[in-house]
Image (cartoon, rainbow, N blue to C red; front, side, top):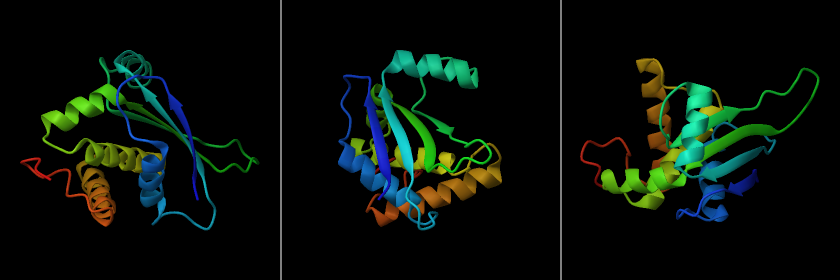
Length: 154
């Protein structure tokens, strides 16, 4: 099993560790070799998210998730995959705006972040299509509908 270090720096509603464990395990299931890995999930408020978004992406305002892949120094063997920083208030707001169940949006954003830690991105259209297809496939295994559907109904 993969190990998650949870850091909770917000009072906003959020899932329990067991739910994050399920989503992380689902996101990694197709990509892992036999080794388990470790990652940090830090739940933050709008202020911390905005500060990190400005510092690392040079973008104003909070963002739903930031992914920080870990690259071990040469010669050091570590199972740390990286850190996910999730803005809990923004996830709740987005779920309401998109007419999604909060748990489904949390699952999607967590899996999205895990894929970033594995090296996927969505800068180029072709890469975005590949990443979205993986997200849809992983979420469907969890009984969660396509998060990119136009009407947002799930």
